[in-house]
Structures are given as structure tokens and as C-alpha cells.
Length: 134
Image 1 (spheres, one colour):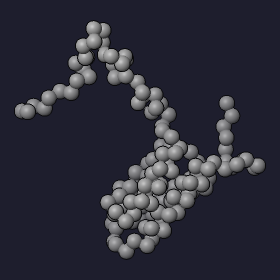
Image 2 (cartoon, helix red, strand yellow):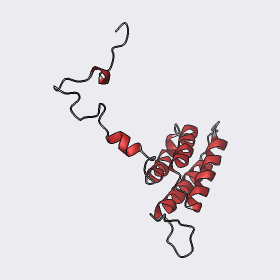
Image 3 (cartoon, helix red, strand yellow):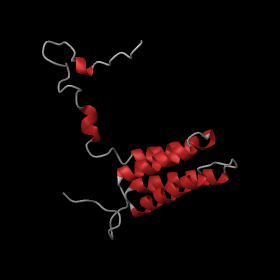
């Protein structure tokens, strides 16, 4: 299996990396123009710089991209004026796909079969337990 890399001479860069770079740039501009004092602005700017560097390098380390997105969202996520630009960054990160094994785990039945154990009765381990005192 051949791995496609954007940094090889003569190969097309990954369009997802270009989309990520453009989305990061938009959020950086929106953050720079936002007048309110944000306690975690420096952290957001640092992670946006890291995302920009990864986009320029054509990096596809999904777990690192998601970590940076989470830190940026935590720093600016409550600012509604930045929500559209943050949403664009999120969409760009999600275009790289999930973590290895994530898709398979999401599609697996809870108890090994779609219908539960033999006889059609639900497996009690899959049922939520009631809260004490409820």
C-alpha cells in the first residue's frame, strides 16, 4: 500500500489540508478582530498556529488535529461571534476522518449481535441501571 504525501515533488497537495488552512486562517482573523478579553486567547492562538503548521505540512495525524480543535473550542467556544469560523475549522478537521478503529467500534453491536442474546430477550448488561433513590 502506497502512502500519498503532499510534500513529495510533483504530487498534488491534499485538498483537505488546504481547506483546513483556509478555515484556520478565517478563525485566526476573526479571533484577532474580536474585541473582548478572552482569558484563553493565547492558548487558542497557539493551537491555531499549530493547526496551521499541520495544514501547511499536509499532516494527517487525526488525533493531534482533534486535540488542537478541542483546545481551541474550549478557549473560544462560548463566543457566538466566533462560532461560524470555529465550525469551519471543525468541519475541516472532520474531513480527515476518524481515529483508527473508531468507525469499526461505532458500527459493532453492543453484545456481539444486532438482536441481543438468543431468544430475543435483551441482555441485562446492555440495559441502563436505575439511579439509587429514583
